[in-house]
Length: 215
View: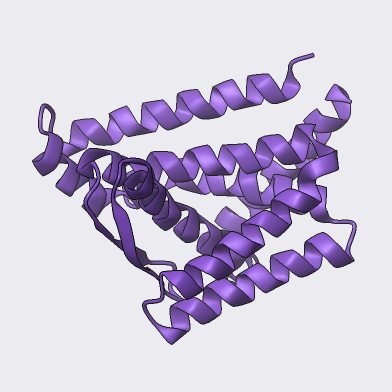
């Protein structure tokens, strides 16, 4: 099992790297669902941060260009801001872990992800375009889960690609969050917090890989 997992992981990393760095416009098109998933996980991380610290979510916007925002009220601002970058990495690692080690629940996990995306587009409505993206993406994931045998590979690839994308994008993606985090928490500059967040995500990803390949 471990050898097969190593091979599948290597293949997925190679496919992602080729598409990301040598695929040009075609690679960007193929990885577009990953871009949207990363954006959703980022914004959902903000939403979870608010909900888990007693706040509320008033809206979530996912744009076609891969940008987005979440409107929250109350809760811990520091946790809400960290939830975007670190929370999305944690969720991506969780998807990969389930896909790699728990084949029996990969279908349920994809269906749950699909439902969460669709509900987010309805309950946290911000625009027709955003809701259509979330519901459409959710429907596609639901179809894969229920009508194909690709659920394990899709879940593993989405989780792994999301984590790789997040780590690669560390000096761009959370920029606005880091600036607000510096104002809210202080202690360090946003540049230092950027590397602190990256270190946390890298440690989390390393720990997850060890858990995946441990006997």
